[in-house]
Length: 555
Ligand code: NA7
Image 1: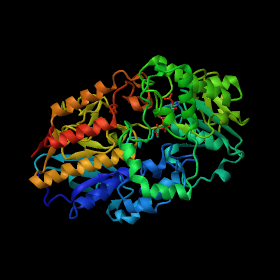
Image 2 (image 1 turned 120 degrees about the horizontal axis):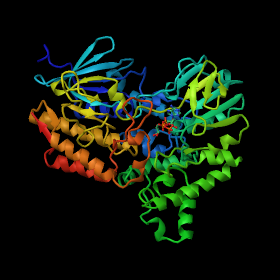
Image 3 (image 1 turned 90 degrees about the horizontal axis):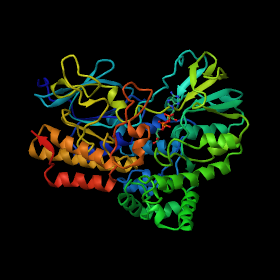
Image 4 (image 1 turned 45 degrees about the horizontal axis):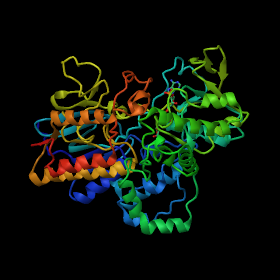
Protein backbone atom coordinates (compact mmCIF):
# COMPACT_ATOMS: atom_id res chain seq x y z
CA UNK A 1 0.00 0.00 0.00
CA UNK A 2 1.06 3.61 -0.37
CA UNK A 3 3.12 4.89 2.51
CA UNK A 4 1.27 7.62 4.41
CA UNK A 5 3.83 10.06 3.11
CA UNK A 6 6.18 9.74 0.13
CA UNK A 7 9.07 7.29 0.73
CA UNK A 8 11.65 8.92 2.99
CA UNK A 9 14.47 8.34 0.51
CA UNK A 10 14.99 8.32 -3.21
CA UNK A 11 17.86 5.86 -2.82
CA UNK A 12 18.90 3.78 0.13
CA UNK A 13 22.38 2.29 -0.10
CA UNK A 14 23.50 -0.56 2.12
CA UNK A 15 27.26 -0.65 2.56
CA UNK A 16 29.77 2.16 3.07
CA UNK A 17 32.78 0.55 1.45
CA UNK A 18 34.22 1.48 -1.94
CA UNK A 19 30.85 0.69 -3.59
CA UNK A 20 28.74 2.74 -1.21
CA UNK A 21 31.12 5.70 -1.30
CA UNK A 22 31.24 5.65 -5.10
CA UNK A 23 27.43 5.34 -5.32
CA UNK A 24 26.72 8.19 -2.95
CA UNK A 25 29.21 10.47 -4.72
CA UNK A 26 27.68 9.87 -8.15
CA UNK A 27 24.04 9.98 -7.07
CA UNK A 28 24.62 13.30 -5.31
CA UNK A 29 26.24 14.69 -8.42
CA UNK A 30 23.70 13.38 -10.91
CA UNK A 31 20.53 13.88 -8.83
CA UNK A 32 21.18 16.96 -6.68
CA UNK A 33 17.73 17.14 -5.06
CA UNK A 34 17.50 13.46 -4.11
CA UNK A 35 17.41 12.17 -0.59
CA UNK A 36 20.04 9.46 -0.24
CA UNK A 37 21.16 7.48 2.76
CA UNK A 38 24.00 5.00 3.23
CA UNK A 39 23.66 2.46 6.01
CA UNK A 40 26.40 0.20 7.32
CA UNK A 41 26.70 -2.10 10.31
CA UNK A 42 30.34 -1.11 10.79
CA UNK A 43 31.20 1.83 13.07
CA UNK A 44 32.83 3.71 10.17
CA UNK A 45 33.39 3.87 6.40
CA UNK A 46 35.65 1.51 4.48
CA UNK A 47 33.82 -1.81 4.19
CA UNK A 48 36.45 -4.49 3.55
CA UNK A 49 39.14 -1.93 4.37
CA UNK A 50 37.46 -1.07 7.64
CA UNK A 51 37.09 -4.65 8.82
CA UNK A 52 40.33 -6.22 7.65
CA UNK A 53 43.05 -4.86 9.91
CA UNK A 54 45.05 -8.01 10.60
CA UNK A 55 48.86 -7.83 10.45
CA UNK A 56 50.11 -8.03 6.88
CA UNK A 57 46.81 -6.95 5.32
CA UNK A 58 47.46 -5.18 2.03
CA UNK A 59 46.44 -4.87 -1.59
CA UNK A 60 48.05 -7.40 -3.88
CA UNK A 61 46.83 -5.61 -6.99
CA UNK A 62 48.43 -2.30 -7.99
CA UNK A 63 47.37 0.60 -5.80
CA UNK A 64 47.37 3.11 -8.67
CA UNK A 65 45.07 0.93 -10.76
CA UNK A 66 42.77 0.21 -7.80
CA UNK A 67 41.91 3.71 -6.58
CA UNK A 68 38.93 5.73 -7.79
CA UNK A 69 39.23 7.38 -11.20
CA UNK A 70 36.44 9.96 -10.85
CA UNK A 71 38.10 12.62 -8.72
CA UNK A 72 40.81 14.08 -10.95
CA UNK A 73 41.77 16.60 -8.32
CA UNK A 74 42.42 13.94 -5.71
CA UNK A 75 44.31 11.86 -8.27
CA UNK A 76 46.69 14.79 -8.60
CA UNK A 77 46.97 15.44 -4.88
CA UNK A 78 47.08 12.06 -3.21
CA UNK A 79 50.57 10.72 -2.55
CA UNK A 80 50.48 6.94 -2.63
CA UNK A 81 53.47 5.43 -0.90
CA UNK A 82 53.40 1.76 -1.91
CA UNK A 83 53.01 -0.02 -5.23
CA UNK A 84 50.81 -2.39 -3.20
CA UNK A 85 49.26 -0.36 -0.40
CA UNK A 86 49.05 -1.72 3.12
CA UNK A 87 45.58 -1.68 4.66
CA UNK A 88 45.96 1.64 6.49
CA UNK A 89 46.99 3.48 3.36
CA UNK A 90 43.88 2.35 1.49
CA UNK A 91 41.64 2.91 4.49
CA UNK A 92 42.95 6.47 4.96
CA UNK A 93 42.43 7.12 1.27
CA UNK A 94 38.76 6.08 1.48
CA UNK A 95 38.31 8.30 4.53
CA UNK A 96 39.88 11.19 2.61
CA UNK A 97 37.41 10.72 -0.29
CA UNK A 98 34.55 10.75 2.20
CA UNK A 99 35.77 13.87 4.04
CA UNK A 100 36.64 15.73 0.86
CA UNK A 101 33.13 15.33 -0.57
CA UNK A 102 31.36 15.62 2.76
CA UNK A 103 29.74 12.21 2.19
CA UNK A 104 29.55 11.36 5.86
CA UNK A 105 26.52 13.55 6.44
CA UNK A 106 24.35 11.06 4.51
CA UNK A 107 25.81 8.00 6.23
CA UNK A 108 24.59 6.09 9.23
CA UNK A 109 26.79 3.53 10.98
CA UNK A 110 26.33 0.75 13.55
CA UNK A 111 23.04 -0.06 11.89
CA UNK A 112 22.10 -3.58 10.94
CA UNK A 113 19.35 -4.09 8.40
CA UNK A 114 17.35 -7.19 9.27
CA UNK A 115 14.48 -7.30 6.78
CA UNK A 116 13.22 -5.72 3.59
CA UNK A 117 9.73 -5.55 2.08
CA UNK A 118 8.76 -4.59 -1.46
CA UNK A 119 5.45 -2.77 -1.86
CA UNK A 120 4.08 -3.62 -5.29
CA UNK A 121 1.35 -0.97 -5.19
CA UNK A 122 3.32 2.03 -3.99
CA UNK A 123 6.56 0.86 -5.69
CA UNK A 124 8.86 1.31 -2.73
CA UNK A 125 11.00 -0.74 -0.35
CA UNK A 126 10.76 -0.71 3.43
CA UNK A 127 13.91 -1.70 5.31
CA UNK A 128 13.81 -2.55 9.00
CA UNK A 129 16.88 -2.43 11.22
CA UNK A 130 17.74 -4.52 14.28
CA UNK A 131 15.97 -2.15 16.68
CA UNK A 132 12.83 -1.89 14.55
CA UNK A 133 13.42 1.47 12.87
CA UNK A 134 12.17 1.62 9.29
CA UNK A 135 13.48 3.29 6.14
CA UNK A 136 11.27 3.66 3.08
CA UNK A 137 12.91 4.23 -0.28
CA UNK A 138 12.08 4.33 -4.00
CA UNK A 139 15.33 2.70 -5.12
CA UNK A 140 17.70 0.43 -3.29
CA UNK A 141 21.37 -0.16 -4.01
CA UNK A 142 23.11 -3.18 -2.61
CA UNK A 143 26.73 -2.30 -1.92
CA UNK A 144 27.20 -5.14 0.55
CA UNK A 145 30.39 -6.55 -0.95
CA UNK A 146 31.07 -10.09 -2.09
CA UNK A 147 33.55 -11.05 0.63
CA UNK A 148 32.00 -9.44 3.69
CA UNK A 149 30.21 -12.13 5.69
CA UNK A 150 32.98 -13.92 7.63
CA UNK A 151 32.65 -17.63 8.39
CA UNK A 152 34.21 -19.41 11.34
CA UNK A 153 35.20 -23.03 10.71
CA UNK A 154 32.48 -25.56 11.40
CA UNK A 155 34.70 -27.58 13.76
CA UNK A 156 33.28 -29.31 16.83
CA UNK A 157 34.30 -27.63 20.08
CA UNK A 158 35.27 -24.28 18.57
CA UNK A 159 33.38 -22.56 21.38
CA UNK A 160 35.13 -24.64 24.06
CA UNK A 161 38.53 -23.06 23.47
CA UNK A 162 39.57 -21.07 26.54
CA UNK A 163 42.03 -18.77 24.78
CA UNK A 164 41.19 -15.92 22.47
CA UNK A 165 39.53 -16.90 19.14
CA UNK A 166 38.66 -14.57 16.35
CA UNK A 167 38.23 -14.28 12.60
CA UNK A 168 40.84 -12.24 10.71
CA UNK A 169 38.21 -9.78 9.48
CA UNK A 170 37.02 -9.18 13.05
CA UNK A 171 40.47 -8.40 14.45
CA UNK A 172 40.07 -7.10 18.03
CA UNK A 173 40.66 -3.34 18.08
CA UNK A 174 42.58 -3.40 21.35
CA UNK A 175 45.14 -6.06 20.46
CA UNK A 176 48.79 -5.02 20.49
CA UNK A 177 51.01 -7.65 18.83
CA UNK A 178 54.13 -6.69 20.82
CA UNK A 179 52.29 -6.89 24.11
CA UNK A 180 49.68 -9.59 23.56
CA UNK A 181 51.44 -12.04 21.24
CA UNK A 182 54.85 -12.10 22.97
CA UNK A 183 55.72 -15.57 24.29
CA UNK A 184 52.34 -16.87 23.13
CA UNK A 185 51.42 -19.98 21.18
CA UNK A 186 49.47 -18.81 18.14
CA UNK A 187 47.43 -20.99 15.77
CA UNK A 188 46.16 -19.99 12.34
CA UNK A 189 43.52 -21.98 10.46
CA UNK A 190 43.37 -21.20 6.75
CA UNK A 191 45.89 -20.56 3.99
CA UNK A 192 43.92 -18.43 1.53
CA UNK A 193 44.87 -14.86 0.58
CA UNK A 194 44.30 -13.74 4.16
CA UNK A 195 46.11 -16.66 5.80
CA UNK A 196 49.14 -16.20 3.56
CA UNK A 197 49.41 -12.51 4.47
CA UNK A 198 48.97 -12.95 8.22
CA UNK A 199 51.20 -16.04 8.50
CA UNK A 200 54.00 -14.16 6.71
CA UNK A 201 53.60 -11.14 8.99
CA UNK A 202 53.48 -13.20 12.21
CA UNK A 203 56.48 -15.33 11.18
CA UNK A 204 58.53 -12.12 11.29
CA UNK A 205 57.52 -11.47 14.94
CA UNK A 206 60.37 -13.14 16.77
CA UNK A 207 58.75 -12.62 20.17
CA UNK A 208 56.01 -15.13 19.37
CA UNK A 209 56.73 -18.47 21.06
CA UNK A 210 55.22 -20.62 18.32
CA UNK A 211 53.09 -20.24 15.22
CA UNK A 212 51.16 -23.33 14.13
CA UNK A 213 49.57 -23.23 10.69
CA UNK A 214 46.67 -25.59 10.08
CA UNK A 215 46.57 -26.16 6.33
CA UNK A 216 43.68 -28.02 4.72
CA UNK A 217 44.30 -27.19 1.07
CA UNK A 218 47.73 -25.96 0.02
CA UNK A 219 47.44 -22.79 -2.04
CA UNK A 220 49.52 -21.56 -4.94
CA UNK A 221 51.17 -18.25 -4.24
CA UNK A 222 53.93 -16.24 -5.87
CA UNK A 223 56.02 -13.15 -5.05
CA UNK A 224 54.33 -9.75 -4.79
CA UNK A 225 57.55 -7.72 -5.11
CA UNK A 226 56.27 -4.58 -3.45
CA UNK A 227 58.25 -1.34 -3.55
CA UNK A 228 57.89 2.26 -2.49
CA UNK A 229 56.52 4.71 -5.02
CA UNK A 230 59.04 7.49 -5.39
CA UNK A 231 58.08 11.16 -5.55
CA UNK A 232 59.09 11.31 -9.21
CA UNK A 233 57.03 8.20 -10.07
CA UNK A 234 54.06 9.78 -8.31
CA UNK A 235 54.52 12.99 -10.26
CA UNK A 236 54.64 11.08 -13.52
CA UNK A 237 51.45 9.26 -12.60
CA UNK A 238 49.67 12.46 -11.64
CA UNK A 239 49.99 13.74 -15.18
CA UNK A 240 49.38 10.40 -16.88
CA UNK A 241 46.75 8.55 -14.87
CA UNK A 242 44.33 8.53 -17.82
CA UNK A 243 46.68 6.17 -19.62
CA UNK A 244 46.62 3.74 -16.70
CA UNK A 245 42.82 3.68 -16.46
CA UNK A 246 42.64 3.34 -20.23
CA UNK A 247 44.92 0.32 -19.98
CA UNK A 248 42.64 -1.23 -17.32
CA UNK A 249 39.66 -0.69 -19.64
CA UNK A 250 41.41 -2.69 -22.37
CA UNK A 251 42.15 -5.87 -20.41
CA UNK A 252 39.85 -8.80 -19.74
CA UNK A 253 40.13 -8.41 -15.95
CA UNK A 254 40.29 -4.64 -15.45
CA UNK A 255 43.84 -4.89 -14.14
CA UNK A 256 46.86 -3.68 -16.10
CA UNK A 257 47.76 -7.23 -17.18
CA UNK A 258 46.66 -9.12 -20.26
CA UNK A 259 47.44 -12.71 -21.16
CA UNK A 260 50.20 -13.39 -23.66
CA UNK A 261 48.19 -14.19 -26.81
CA UNK A 262 50.46 -17.13 -27.68
CA UNK A 263 49.69 -20.67 -26.59
CA UNK A 264 52.02 -22.53 -24.26
CA UNK A 265 53.28 -25.15 -26.69
CA UNK A 266 53.40 -22.87 -29.72
CA UNK A 267 56.75 -21.59 -28.53
CA UNK A 268 60.07 -23.33 -27.86
CA UNK A 269 60.91 -24.59 -24.37
CA UNK A 270 63.42 -21.74 -24.03
CA UNK A 271 60.86 -19.11 -24.98
CA UNK A 272 58.32 -20.59 -22.62
CA UNK A 273 60.68 -20.62 -19.66
CA UNK A 274 61.84 -17.11 -20.55
CA UNK A 275 58.28 -15.74 -20.23
CA UNK A 276 57.68 -17.64 -16.97
CA UNK A 277 60.95 -16.33 -15.53
CA UNK A 278 60.30 -12.76 -16.61
CA UNK A 279 56.82 -12.72 -15.08
CA UNK A 280 58.09 -14.33 -11.90
CA UNK A 281 60.63 -11.53 -11.46
CA UNK A 282 58.10 -8.74 -12.07
CA UNK A 283 55.83 -7.29 -9.41
CA UNK A 284 52.11 -8.05 -9.32
CA UNK A 285 49.47 -10.19 -10.95
CA UNK A 286 51.30 -10.57 -14.27
CA UNK A 287 52.41 -13.98 -13.05
CA UNK A 288 48.76 -14.99 -12.81
CA UNK A 289 47.16 -13.03 -15.63
CA UNK A 290 50.02 -12.41 -18.04
CA UNK A 291 50.97 -15.99 -18.95
CA UNK A 292 50.15 -17.86 -22.15
CA UNK A 293 46.51 -17.57 -23.15
CA UNK A 294 45.73 -21.29 -22.76
CA UNK A 295 47.17 -21.68 -19.23
CA UNK A 296 43.77 -21.95 -17.58
CA UNK A 297 41.96 -23.94 -20.29
CA UNK A 298 44.55 -26.51 -21.38
CA UNK A 299 45.56 -29.00 -18.73
CA UNK A 300 49.05 -29.68 -20.10
CA UNK A 301 49.70 -25.97 -20.32
CA UNK A 302 48.56 -25.53 -16.75
CA UNK A 303 50.72 -28.48 -15.63
CA UNK A 304 53.78 -26.91 -17.26
CA UNK A 305 53.31 -23.61 -15.49
CA UNK A 306 52.46 -25.28 -12.17
CA UNK A 307 55.69 -27.31 -12.39
CA UNK A 308 57.66 -24.10 -12.93
CA UNK A 309 56.14 -22.44 -9.83
CA UNK A 310 56.54 -25.64 -7.77
CA UNK A 311 60.28 -25.63 -8.52
CA UNK A 312 60.48 -22.05 -7.24
CA UNK A 313 58.77 -23.07 -4.00
CA UNK A 314 61.22 -25.98 -3.54
CA UNK A 315 64.10 -23.53 -3.81
CA UNK A 316 62.69 -21.38 -1.05
CA UNK A 317 61.75 -23.91 1.63
CA UNK A 318 64.65 -25.56 3.50
CA UNK A 319 62.86 -28.75 4.52
CA UNK A 320 61.90 -30.80 1.42
CA UNK A 321 58.99 -32.50 3.21
CA UNK A 322 57.51 -29.15 4.21
CA UNK A 323 58.07 -27.86 0.67
CA UNK A 324 56.05 -30.76 -0.77
CA UNK A 325 53.27 -30.12 1.75
CA UNK A 326 53.11 -26.48 0.64
CA UNK A 327 52.90 -27.33 -3.07
CA UNK A 328 49.29 -27.95 -4.11
CA UNK A 329 48.84 -31.41 -5.60
CA UNK A 330 45.07 -31.34 -6.09
CA UNK A 331 44.76 -28.29 -8.34
CA UNK A 332 46.93 -26.36 -10.75
CA UNK A 333 48.35 -22.87 -10.48
CA UNK A 334 45.87 -20.04 -10.96
CA UNK A 335 42.73 -22.15 -10.72
CA UNK A 336 41.89 -20.45 -7.46
CA UNK A 337 42.55 -16.83 -6.67
CA UNK A 338 46.37 -16.50 -6.52
CA UNK A 339 47.45 -14.52 -3.45
CA UNK A 340 50.75 -12.69 -3.86
CA UNK A 341 53.21 -12.97 -0.99
CA UNK A 342 56.29 -11.32 0.49
CA UNK A 343 58.20 -14.15 2.13
CA UNK A 344 55.39 -16.65 2.75
CA UNK A 345 57.39 -19.76 1.89
CA UNK A 346 60.40 -18.59 3.91
CA UNK A 347 58.09 -18.36 6.95
CA UNK A 348 58.40 -22.13 7.25
CA UNK A 349 62.17 -21.86 7.58
CA UNK A 350 61.73 -20.28 11.03
CA UNK A 351 62.17 -22.79 13.84
CA UNK A 352 59.10 -21.50 15.71
CA UNK A 353 56.74 -21.97 12.73
CA UNK A 354 55.09 -25.34 12.31
CA UNK A 355 52.95 -26.55 9.42
CA UNK A 356 50.20 -29.01 10.31
CA UNK A 357 48.97 -30.90 7.25
CA UNK A 358 45.24 -31.42 7.77
CA UNK A 359 45.09 -33.72 4.72
CA UNK A 360 47.21 -36.19 6.72
CA UNK A 361 45.92 -35.39 10.21
CA UNK A 362 42.52 -33.67 10.05
CA UNK A 363 41.29 -31.65 13.00
CA UNK A 364 39.13 -33.91 15.15
CA UNK A 365 37.93 -31.17 17.49
CA UNK A 366 38.90 -28.09 19.41
CA UNK A 367 39.35 -28.42 23.15
CA UNK A 368 39.80 -25.90 25.96
CA UNK A 369 43.58 -26.01 25.35
CA UNK A 370 43.90 -26.00 21.60
CA UNK A 371 43.40 -28.03 18.46
CA UNK A 372 43.24 -31.81 18.62
CA UNK A 373 44.17 -33.62 15.40
CA UNK A 374 43.16 -37.12 14.30
CA UNK A 375 46.51 -38.58 15.42
CA UNK A 376 45.53 -37.70 19.00
CA UNK A 377 47.94 -34.81 19.36
CA UNK A 378 46.78 -31.65 21.14
CA UNK A 379 48.34 -28.56 19.60
CA UNK A 380 48.30 -26.27 22.61
CA UNK A 381 47.39 -22.69 21.81
CA UNK A 382 46.90 -19.37 23.57
CA UNK A 383 45.33 -17.61 20.59
CA UNK A 384 43.43 -19.12 17.66
CA UNK A 385 43.15 -17.01 14.52
CA UNK A 386 40.62 -18.11 11.92
CA UNK A 387 41.64 -17.01 8.43
CA UNK A 388 38.74 -19.10 7.19
CA UNK A 389 37.22 -16.82 4.60
CA UNK A 390 33.72 -15.68 3.83
CA UNK A 391 30.24 -16.76 2.91
CA UNK A 392 31.05 -15.22 -0.45
CA UNK A 393 28.81 -13.40 -2.92
CA UNK A 394 25.40 -14.40 -1.54
CA UNK A 395 26.40 -14.34 2.15
CA UNK A 396 25.78 -10.66 2.86
CA UNK A 397 22.38 -10.88 1.15
CA UNK A 398 21.51 -13.84 3.31
CA UNK A 399 21.88 -11.73 6.47
CA UNK A 400 18.68 -9.89 5.49
CA UNK A 401 15.20 -11.43 5.37
CA UNK A 402 13.90 -10.46 1.94
CA UNK A 403 10.29 -10.09 0.92
CA UNK A 404 10.49 -9.43 -2.82
CA UNK A 405 7.62 -9.24 -5.25
CA UNK A 406 4.74 -11.54 -4.20
CA UNK A 407 6.54 -11.81 -0.87
CA UNK A 408 9.17 -14.11 -2.36
CA UNK A 409 12.32 -14.77 -0.30
CA UNK A 410 15.64 -14.10 -2.06
CA UNK A 411 17.67 -17.08 -0.89
CA UNK A 412 16.40 -20.45 0.23
CA UNK A 413 16.83 -24.14 -0.22
CA UNK A 414 13.16 -25.14 -0.28
CA UNK A 415 9.79 -23.66 -0.98
CA UNK A 416 8.41 -21.61 1.88
CA UNK A 417 5.34 -22.76 3.79
CA UNK A 418 3.24 -20.59 1.48
CA UNK A 419 4.76 -22.37 -1.53
CA UNK A 420 6.75 -19.33 -2.62
CA UNK A 421 9.91 -20.26 -4.48
CA UNK A 422 13.10 -18.49 -3.44
CA UNK A 423 14.43 -16.21 -6.14
CA UNK A 424 17.94 -17.67 -5.75
CA UNK A 425 17.24 -21.31 -4.81
CA UNK A 426 20.22 -23.20 -3.37
CA UNK A 427 22.30 -19.99 -3.31
CA UNK A 428 22.18 -20.05 -7.11
CA UNK A 429 21.94 -16.45 -8.28
CA UNK A 430 19.67 -15.44 -11.12
CA UNK A 431 20.39 -11.93 -12.39
CA UNK A 432 20.26 -9.67 -15.41
CA UNK A 433 23.76 -8.33 -16.12
CA UNK A 434 24.65 -8.96 -12.49
CA UNK A 435 22.96 -5.64 -11.73
CA UNK A 436 19.28 -6.44 -11.34
CA UNK A 437 17.23 -9.42 -10.18
CA UNK A 438 13.76 -10.57 -11.24
CA UNK A 439 11.09 -10.20 -8.51
CA UNK A 440 13.35 -7.65 -6.79
CA UNK A 441 12.10 -4.45 -8.44
CA UNK A 442 13.97 -1.16 -8.03
CA UNK A 443 16.98 -3.01 -6.59
CA UNK A 444 20.46 -2.63 -8.08
CA UNK A 445 23.72 -4.33 -7.14
CA UNK A 446 27.38 -3.38 -7.33
CA UNK A 447 29.82 -6.32 -7.22
CA UNK A 448 26.75 -8.53 -7.38
CA UNK A 449 26.75 -12.14 -8.51
CA UNK A 450 27.30 -12.58 -12.26
CA UNK A 451 29.52 -9.56 -12.52
CA UNK A 452 33.08 -10.03 -13.72
CA UNK A 453 35.25 -10.08 -10.61
CA UNK A 454 38.56 -8.59 -11.59
CA UNK A 455 39.69 -5.18 -10.46
CA UNK A 456 36.87 -4.43 -8.00
CA UNK A 457 37.05 -0.64 -8.14
CA UNK A 458 36.88 -0.61 -11.93
CA UNK A 459 33.77 -2.88 -11.75
CA UNK A 460 32.18 -0.68 -9.10
CA UNK A 461 32.62 2.51 -11.12
CA UNK A 462 31.12 0.90 -14.19
CA UNK A 463 28.15 -0.52 -12.28
CA UNK A 464 27.42 2.75 -10.47
CA UNK A 465 27.40 4.69 -13.74
CA UNK A 466 25.09 2.17 -15.38
CA UNK A 467 22.72 2.17 -12.40
CA UNK A 468 22.62 5.98 -12.34
CA UNK A 469 21.78 5.92 -16.04
CA UNK A 470 18.83 3.58 -15.39
CA UNK A 471 17.54 5.74 -12.52
CA UNK A 472 17.88 8.82 -14.69
CA UNK A 473 15.93 7.05 -17.47
CA UNK A 474 13.17 6.29 -14.93
CA UNK A 475 13.10 9.92 -13.89
CA UNK A 476 12.97 11.23 -17.45
CA UNK A 477 10.02 8.98 -18.30
CA UNK A 478 8.21 9.23 -15.01
CA UNK A 479 8.71 5.52 -14.29
CA UNK A 480 8.48 4.38 -10.69
CA UNK A 481 9.21 0.72 -11.34
CA UNK A 482 12.05 -1.20 -12.97
CA UNK A 483 12.60 -4.95 -13.03
CA UNK A 484 14.31 -7.39 -15.42
CA UNK A 485 12.07 -9.81 -17.28
CA UNK A 486 12.35 -13.48 -16.30
CA UNK A 487 13.44 -14.21 -19.89
CA UNK A 488 16.23 -11.64 -19.87
CA UNK A 489 17.52 -12.90 -16.53
CA UNK A 490 17.34 -16.48 -17.71
CA UNK A 491 19.23 -15.65 -20.90
CA UNK A 492 21.91 -13.72 -19.00
CA UNK A 493 22.27 -16.45 -16.39
CA UNK A 494 22.65 -19.04 -19.18
CA UNK A 495 25.25 -16.87 -20.86
CA UNK A 496 27.19 -16.67 -17.57
CA UNK A 497 27.19 -20.47 -17.30
CA UNK A 498 28.08 -20.84 -20.98
CA UNK A 499 31.12 -18.52 -20.62
CA UNK A 500 32.49 -20.60 -17.77
CA UNK A 501 32.59 -23.80 -19.85
CA UNK A 502 36.05 -25.11 -20.55
CA UNK A 503 37.69 -23.17 -17.74
CA UNK A 504 39.79 -25.40 -15.49
CA UNK A 505 38.79 -23.18 -12.54
CA UNK A 506 35.38 -24.87 -12.63
CA UNK A 507 36.95 -28.10 -11.41
CA UNK A 508 38.14 -26.63 -8.12
CA UNK A 509 36.21 -25.79 -4.94
CA UNK A 510 36.69 -22.22 -3.81
CA UNK A 511 34.67 -19.14 -2.99
CA UNK A 512 34.83 -18.37 -6.70
CA UNK A 513 32.89 -21.53 -7.50
CA UNK A 514 30.42 -20.92 -4.69
CA UNK A 515 31.62 -23.63 -2.31
CA UNK A 516 32.07 -23.08 1.43
CA UNK A 517 31.90 -26.18 3.57
CA UNK A 518 31.31 -24.06 6.69
CA UNK A 519 27.99 -22.80 5.29
CA UNK A 520 24.88 -24.96 5.14
CA UNK A 521 23.70 -25.41 1.56
CA UNK A 522 26.99 -24.32 -0.06
CA UNK A 523 28.47 -27.69 -0.92
CA UNK A 524 27.70 -27.79 -4.65
CA UNK A 525 29.66 -25.77 -7.19
CA UNK A 526 27.82 -23.02 -8.98
CA UNK A 527 28.74 -20.29 -11.42
CA UNK A 528 28.53 -17.11 -9.41
CA UNK A 529 30.83 -14.88 -11.43
CA UNK A 530 30.89 -13.79 -15.03
CA UNK A 531 34.01 -15.18 -16.63
CA UNK A 532 33.48 -13.70 -20.06
CA UNK A 533 35.79 -10.70 -20.16
CA UNK A 534 35.16 -7.30 -18.59
CA UNK A 535 35.27 -5.89 -22.12
CA UNK A 536 32.50 -8.22 -23.31
CA UNK A 537 30.52 -7.50 -20.14
CA UNK A 538 30.63 -3.77 -20.74
CA UNK A 539 29.74 -4.28 -24.39
CA UNK A 540 26.61 -6.15 -23.37
CA UNK A 541 25.64 -3.45 -20.87
CA UNK A 542 26.09 -0.76 -23.52
CA UNK A 543 24.06 -2.80 -26.01
CA UNK A 544 21.23 -3.09 -23.46
CA UNK A 545 21.26 0.67 -22.92
CA UNK A 546 21.28 1.56 -26.62
CA UNK A 547 18.28 -0.72 -27.12
CA UNK A 548 16.31 1.35 -24.57
CA UNK A 549 17.30 -0.96 -21.71
CA UNK A 550 16.10 -4.09 -23.48
CA UNK A 551 15.49 -6.76 -20.86
CA UNK A 552 14.11 -4.38 -18.26
CA UNK A 553 10.40 -3.67 -17.67
CA UNK A 554 9.47 -0.14 -16.68
CA UNK A 555 6.18 1.06 -15.21
P1 NA7 B 1 39.63 -18.04 1.43
O1 NA7 B 1 40.42 -17.79 0.22
O2 NA7 B 1 38.24 -18.56 1.24
O3 NA7 B 1 40.48 -19.04 2.35
C1 NA7 B 1 39.94 -19.67 3.47
C2 NA7 B 1 40.94 -20.64 4.02
O4 NA7 B 1 40.43 -21.22 5.22
C3 NA7 B 1 41.21 -21.80 3.07
O5 NA7 B 1 42.57 -22.13 3.16
C4 NA7 B 1 40.33 -22.90 3.64
O6 NA7 B 1 40.73 -24.20 3.31
C5 NA7 B 1 40.47 -22.63 5.11
N1 NA7 B 1 39.38 -23.22 5.90
C6 NA7 B 1 38.08 -22.83 5.91
N2 NA7 B 1 37.37 -23.60 6.75
C7 NA7 B 1 38.22 -24.50 7.27
C8 NA7 B 1 38.07 -25.56 8.18
N3 NA7 B 1 36.87 -25.86 8.70
N4 NA7 B 1 39.17 -26.28 8.49
C9 NA7 B 1 40.36 -25.99 7.94
N5 NA7 B 1 40.57 -25.00 7.07
C10 NA7 B 1 39.51 -24.25 6.74
O7 NA7 B 1 39.49 -16.72 2.32
P2 NA7 B 1 40.52 -15.53 2.49
O8 NA7 B 1 40.01 -14.65 3.56
O9 NA7 B 1 41.89 -16.04 2.60
O10 NA7 B 1 40.46 -14.77 1.13
C11 NA7 B 1 39.21 -14.32 0.60
C12 NA7 B 1 39.42 -13.33 -0.50
O11 NA7 B 1 39.65 -12.05 0.08
C13 NA7 B 1 40.61 -13.52 -1.36
O12 NA7 B 1 40.43 -14.38 -2.41
C14 NA7 B 1 40.92 -12.11 -1.84
O13 NA7 B 1 40.24 -11.83 -3.04
C15 NA7 B 1 40.44 -11.25 -0.75
P3 NA7 B 1 40.16 -24.95 1.98
O14 NA7 B 1 40.88 -24.29 0.85
O15 NA7 B 1 38.67 -24.68 1.93
O16 NA7 B 1 40.49 -26.37 2.15
